[in-house]
Amino acid sequence: MKLYNTLSRSVEELQPLNPPVVTMYTCGPTVYDYTHIGHMRTYTMVDILRRTLTMQGFHVKQVMNVTDVGHLTSDGDTGEDKLEKGAKKYGKTVWEIAQFYTDFFHSAMKVINILPPDVESKATDHIPEMIELIQTLGKKGFTYETDEAIYFDVSKFSNYGKLSRQKIDEKLQAVRDEVFEDPQKKHPADFVLWFKRVGKFADHTMHWPSPWGEGFPGWHIECSAMSMKYLGESIDIHTGGIDHIPVHHENEIAQSEGATGKKFVQIWVHPNFLQVDGQKMSKSLGNFYTYEDVQKKGIEPLALRLLFLQAHYRQSLNFTWESAKGAQETLDKLKNTVLTLRSQTERSMLSEDKLAKIDEYRIAFRTALANDLQTPQAVSVMFEMLKSNIPSEDKLDLLYEFDEVLGLDLAKTEQEKIPDEIIQLGWTRLQARQAKDFAKSDELRKLIEEKGYNIEDREETFEIIKKNR
Ligand code: AMP
Ligand code: ZN
Image (cartoon, rainbow, N blue to C red; front, top):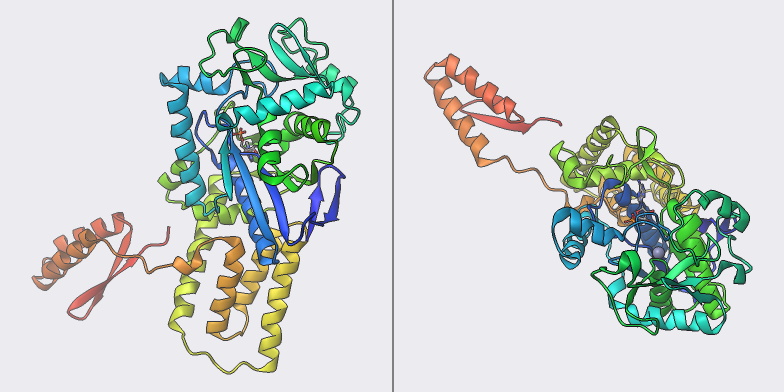
């Protein structure tokens, strides 16, 4: 299995620390607003990675956090806590906000067929682990305290910047314009491990006792603490969107490697953004759609999944309604193919060359995915296979096998049921026709068509067919 590693900027062979187990940590959502389809793209690509590894015989152990405290609006140390901001905006408690958007996140993952991680853990359930880790860092000389917070001192960690390849001085340049709120902070790239409940955070709702007084953790420490707790000090794969590279993941490396002295992550995998009109789809820009917005336009979340698969995860993908509709049409065709293949149940004798062909398609599919998850190629192998002369039943078997990874849920395809209301309209129309009331019969045909169906006359009866979207 080859994967692009952001750390080395090259495609590498995955060499798990304890094969066949592969440990994978996935940065989860900050639950202060709706999960949008940009988030869904990142988690879909991680799901494909996980399913690919499983197909290859690895035993994946995946942990994902849910951030419900400490993530400030800047990703750094300035701004408001996103959860507190969400609570104010909606007139709810922070706990209600976290629960509501966690539930929404789960429903978004379910409709797009993303397998749940083995462990999903909330930041607020791991405060003692975070405090312990900060204490370890303190003992090793990586921290300092101001009146407002406990900081990680990046000048003490010689490898700081190895992931983003940003020099600390450049980072200084980049953040110079930021409102600098804590006058005792030594270096702008230093980051908060623990916020004290003082100053602008004096009224912070979520707070816990700590050796440094009441307060709450900084955002980055949760991932180091939870990764270590559930997966050990060194892990195989860590995932997150590309926006995490320069700050969040850089800081996770500093904290984890500072504390253990060991390499934190073998391979860093960062899916690129879903964009709208050339800009990142994001909560803060307000240019986002949820899966519900997509459904309202007659597009299934699984069509989005297909759309995501048709682009490589390291490329940005510009979202348009045209492309989403196109993906829905392709998905509809795929489902029709499944229904047709199912009705052709005869399994003919497999000749040598057909057997060889099945193997060829299987190998081509697996090779595409093993090569840094070339999903567009894997999808086109699937379509080529469907066009081939392999017997129907074998085709269907192979399609289902591919779908174990692609996750389009094709095995669950069912003939769409025509609603009773439409069938009733059909009968009323038949009666009108038999009574030679053609004006009424035409009117009813129109009504049926407006509702998305076509009606065809048969002798003494009729057939209703759902229109293509
Ligand atoms: P957040 O809840 O903002 O921490 O984001 C959760 C995950 O979604 C992170 O891995 C982000 O990098 C990722 N993400 C955020 N916006 C987008 C986007 N427009 N396209 C793809 N991934 C995104
Ligand atoms: Zn994280």
